[in-house]
Length: 178
Image 1 (cartoon, rainbow, N blue to C red):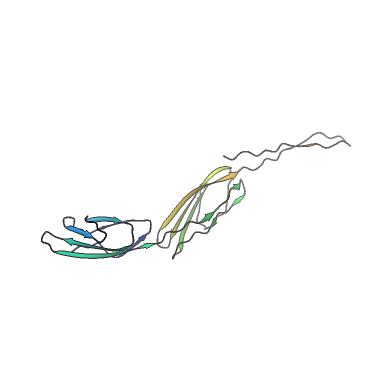
Image 2: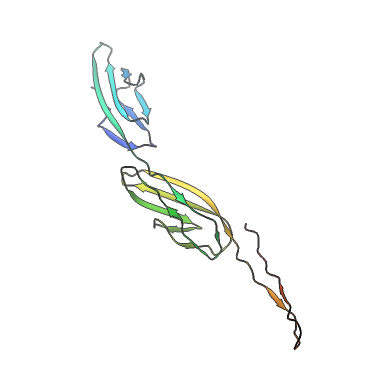
């Protein structure tokens, strides 16, 4: 008697191996396949009929359902060095809830939904986000932002004599990010 296992639910990004445990017999799966094992990622009802050399057959059925994946929806803007950076996180799990949120921002790990971070250096920074649903399904993304350098304020004042014009020269600079 074939046994392809109990009904299962998997994350919609996963696939599963279905097998009867009877590799030497003739197989006919409901999806048209005739192999002893099949990989599938589609939800639905899977039916297999196994026939031995005497023409005797037996069947088994399994239903596979999909659990939804977290849907990443974030909004970020470039930021200035030493300014507060807070990503806006509108991510959801259809028909579920977010169980875990893990950010890696400039090498610092946060588990808040919308962490506050201050970049101490300027340049192009990579940020990663991993979301895990209450079903155990996960979604990941990595993106980059530009952290702009702080301007350096430099003002030069010439020696001033009484009753003469004061001249202030602006020599401030802004470095290019990167």
